[in-house]
Figure 1: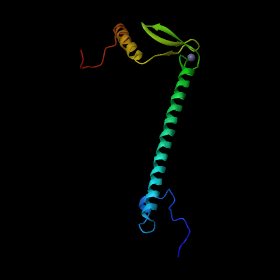
Figure 2 (figure 1 turned 90 degrees about the horizontal axis):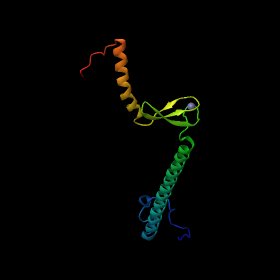
Figure 3 (figure 1 turned 60 degrees about the vertical axis):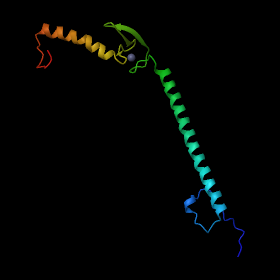
Figure 4 (figure 1 turned 90 degrees about the vertical axis):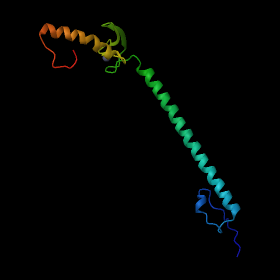
Length: 133
Ligand SMILES: [Zn+2]
């Protein structure tokens, strides 16, 4: 009995699922090629989506930077660069909060350490046991 039904498997059918004998070799080949094309397209689509997400993330970061640059993280007002203990720091003109960039905390700590030592000497506070000295 001959059937006019299309024996071609749907393109999403994995090549391994196709049983030999049920479809001709040509049909199997076509199905495998279509499956490969779909996989490639899906991969490209995913890559495009990821690329777009990366672009959007980049844009969002840029916008955030533009909106927040030199603004106080506490009250949102403008920050003014000011020299404090010979270090350039950002001070809020509204709430007077002081904000430090990377490395400035270490610089201040280094300078403050001397100040604390002098203060401790004046107050008669002795250092606890330390291997260093
Ligand atoms: Zn502020």
